[in-house]
Amino acid sequence: MKKRYRLKKNEDFQLVFKGGFSVANRQFVVYQRKTETNPHLRVGLSVSKKVGNAVTRNRVKRLIREVIRELEPQMKNRDYVIIARKPTAEMDFHQVRKSLLHVLKLGKIVKPVHGRK
Picture 1 (cartoon, rainbow, N blue to C red):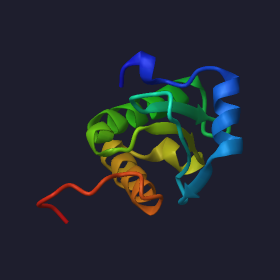
Picture 2 (tube, helix red, strand yellow):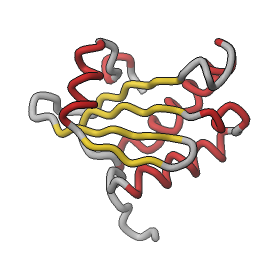
Picture 3 (cartoon, rainbow, N blue to C red):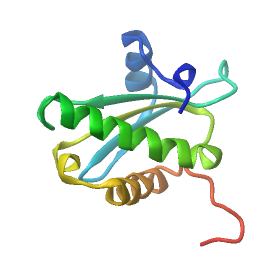
Picture 4 (cartoon, rainbow, N blue to C red):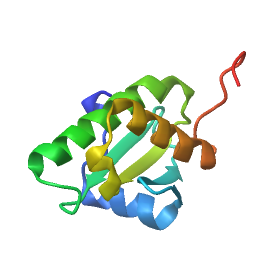
């Protein structure tokens, strides 16, 4: 995921929280908001200190970014804030991918790929 596609400012996070809607499972909460100004999607990540120390939090963020990078072509062009919950600290890449894909499908964020179920 390219750096220019990241939400960084608190104002941007607040716009997504207030103007969007959320979907969640046990590991992730995903807020999304439609934007007319951006021709691409933007993602903000939030990993609380409850998840673990700095090393653990950074690892979780790297895993989420990699999953988003893979799924980016299937996702709608919106602003997203992904909040990682405590169970993500013990998850490996495949578990993170499966759980995040599940919550993205719940929110109808991932466009279906033709030829696959």
